[in-house]
Amino acid sequence: MSDVISQDIDRVLITEEAIEARCRELAAQIEADYDEKHITPFIVGLLKGSVPFMAELIKYFRHPIEIDFMSVSSYAGTDSIGDVKINKDTDLSAKGKNVLIVEDIVDTGRTLAEVRKLFYNKGAEDVKIVSLLDKPDRRIVDIQADYVGFSVPNEFVVGYGLDYNQLYRNLPYIGVLKSEIYE
Ligand code: PRP
Image (cartoon, rainbow, N blue to C red; front, side):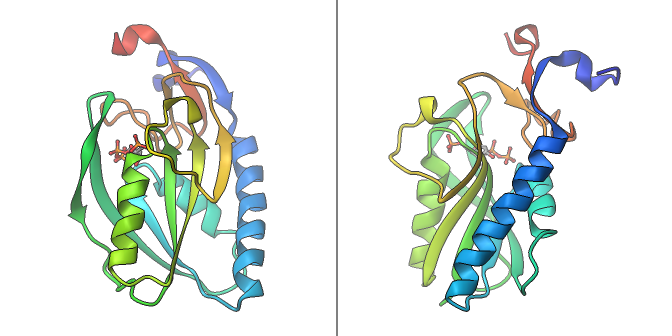
């Protein structure tokens, strides 16, 4: 860890290699589930945290998919807030589609609960969720992603899309941020 931003990282929790291997597995599993029903998934990444994970994940699909992005806000500082605001909706219509929401982390679960509801209100046929990380200790809303990359402890994790004050998203691994950075 000799690069500059890595100096703020206490330790690496999940390596780039482990993330790539897990993305391969997840894509194969998801694709098999959709193929069984002859479905073309409408894969929607929630900006911005999902970008590296979504880019890695979709590389391993071997059948047609549609992709889109949506931006919602759920965080103020380091604490979750209740309301979810839509900053950017999907470009394509979700009506009648089998939506797969791509997330970087399920924390309190509020964002996903709201976004899932929203897609059903838009007339989606089905809504599933894939999240790179799951932090079950922080859950407030009873929601589970259908596909999870890794379960993580209740620590301040950054990297591979996850930020602290908009920084560290470009780290190619998931790391625990040094406490002096956010305290
Ligand atoms: C983060 C993260 C999830 C959400 C999880 O998004 O990407 O979308 O919070 O929290 P929850 O389960 O408590 O709702 P954020 O709003 O920080 O946007 P970002 O993806 O741009 O970082």
